[in-house]
Amino acid sequence: MILRFLAALFLIYAFGFLAFAVSLPAPAAKTETDAVIVLTGGQGRIARGIEVVEQGMAKEMFVSGVDPEVKPAEFAEQFEVSNRLMNCCVTLGFLAVDTRSNAGEVAQWMKEKEFTSARLVTTDWHMARAHSEVSGSLPADTRIVKDAVVSHPDLATLFLEYNKLLASEISQGLPV
Image (cartoon, rainbow, N blue to C red; front, side):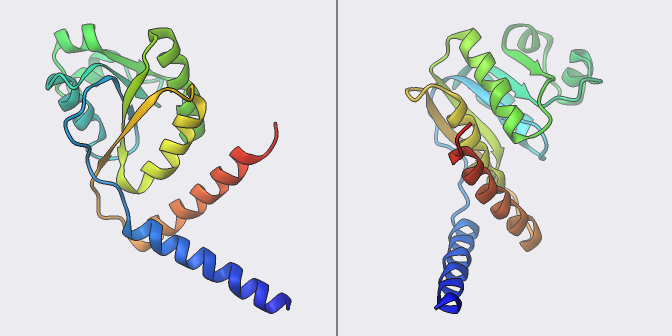
């Protein structure tokens, strides 16, 4: 009886991982939102956020999880962001150190700006957990568009991220 239960649990876990691995999200279509939220940590994320603002699909960009040592001028130079764009439309967030704290930092910024929609930019393999954390920290009526940066993750990256996703989902469901 216990062996069957454990086997069933393993099959659910394995099929869940398979579904996660084969259904990574893609870049979003041209959809306008109030803001674009970029979570640091992966190649192409910031470039995608800048592209969204430059194309007029979002009014402002918030970059969450920037290293506190990075100065705005250094950021602008590294990512080739014009002074005009930096001054009008880019906010750097220095408080977050992980996906959960990204969500808190994003929620605070969205509330201050009174924005009700955002495009979330992160790597495809990170999107499920990032979306879960960020949307869980925002009001229920906030519209979040998933805009994944395509990557080619190895099996170890997918396995680790799937387990982090499960842990995140479980911890979000626990009473505070």
